[in-house]
Amino acid sequence: MIRRGSCLLAGLVLVLALGGCASGDDDPGDAGTTASASATTGGSASSSPATETEQAVEISVAVTDGKVEPEPRRVEVAKDSQVRLIVTSDVDDELHVHGYEVEAELEAGRPAGVELVADQTGIFEVETHETELELLQLEVR
Amino acid sequence: MTGRVIEQGHLLAHGVGSRDDLPIPFAYALTGAAVALIASFLALGLLWREPRLDPAGAGRPVPSWLARGLDARWFRVTLRLLGVAATAYVVMAAVAGRDDALNPTAGVVYVLLWIGVPIVSMLVGPVWKMVNPIRSLHWALSRALRTDPAEGMSPLPASLGYWPAAVSLLAFVWMELVAPDNTTLPVLRVFFAVYVAVHLLAATWWGSGWFDKGDGFEVFSSLAGRLSVLGRRADGTIVLRNPLDGVAGTPVAPGLFAVVGVLLGSTAYDSFANTPWWVTQLQSGPLSAEVTGTLGLFGAVVIVTSAFAGAAAMSGRGSGLRPLDVGAEYAHSLVPIVMGYVVAHYWSLLVLIGQQTVIQLSDPLGTGANWLGTGGRGIDSSLAGPTLVAVVQVVAVVTGHVLGVVLAHDRAVGILPPRRALVGQVPLLVLMVCYTVGGLTLLFAA
Image (tube, rainbow over all chains, first blue to last red; front, side):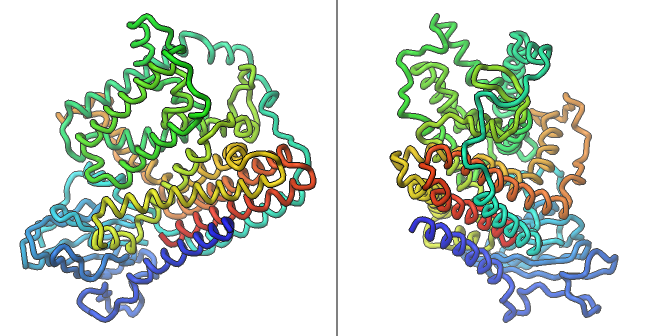
């Protein structure tokens, strides 16, 4: 029983973890909130490794009543690509990209954001300081 | 666009570390799982049928000049004084320093003490008991009270075992992984004020033997130190030994499996808590982030610990031992699994934030000082590249698994009747495979 239970646990962890990742990707309905590679090269932003081309990725997020829209997810970008984060919050706040240590003041109701060159690999949290919300995770590979 | 770049010190803004490792490639996870599975069944079929590991007579004595030096009073006193001085330095930063992201205290606690000390212990032996500042404080207090530090007011009940250490470790991981503002100075000050007070009182009552079983940091360091090639035989001789002999010599005592369960469960929760799915539960779920986080952390610890207790109890059927005693007999076999997972999960954190902490330690008060001369250094990330990290992670997890399987096998043939010895191992083998596949899954998917 216990053995089966622990295997079930491992399976559950697997399903939850995969579900967690998948829910970040299967959200193509809202074009404005999904990472879109606006590069003219047809390749996806995630697969080609660091070529010195200027791939720009634009990510939009909205914060309303303490809810993040779209839900926190992982956005995959290629190393060295240009990333533009646009955040619209319904309260004054401060935006912070961990690891890259980029910050921006957010004024209630006005889209604001930061640009950065994703030159370090890893997973980086993007969060707000006042409302203490994690908006998304930038997965740079 | 009003982006501005701020100082690198902001890396530790909240939680420990500002970046997570990339998921390991699927092929790595699959290979690791396959190796673990095959090694497990080979072990069952091919390993010895009589206990072989021998903590009492293990290894070869080190040269006598080295043994004399390591046991010399001046060496021991120097280590104690260094421990006290280093602690005083960090307390200064924690009490008089500025409460900002450049303060080294959080990095010292969550990276150097929590990750660095066990990893160093794994390499050279149980270092924390030699520098533990609470031990030194207790010694000084006993001198002032004219009592024998080892004696205390009352003998330490054997039934307590490692339970106090399990509780103190659980309190620490709760602060590390759940408590709000856990890198700010007020939170760290309160935690360690309470921690030191509790352990000082307990040691005053029960004598300094309390630290061996009750102080979570010391127990973690000493368990990791069992994996060191440098160790002691039962008679105190310092030897170079097979690490398996060291781990097999872990004292069997109640609560050890809970200590190991807290360490393993909390590391798994830390991994899991980074998934966007869990982040969403924390910030938009029906309960507050603290309640959800507490339930998640305690749930992970309870599941990991009770799965082990259950597997051990099943393994022990027919041995005449009580189920909990069987759990105590096998608990040491999880030590390499814990350390494998700690290395896998925290390697890059130790490399990157460890360096950052050393840089920040040069300016403990936030006055722009550079007392240690490390202030101007940059962070060298060459030991934290994605491929190296992925390899370290898989190798650490699989190595821990294989050592765990061998240790459990050796103990099984020792405590189980011969005809039950092989069948009796199967529950533990299955459990370890589950832990390892679960761990690799978290590395791949979380």
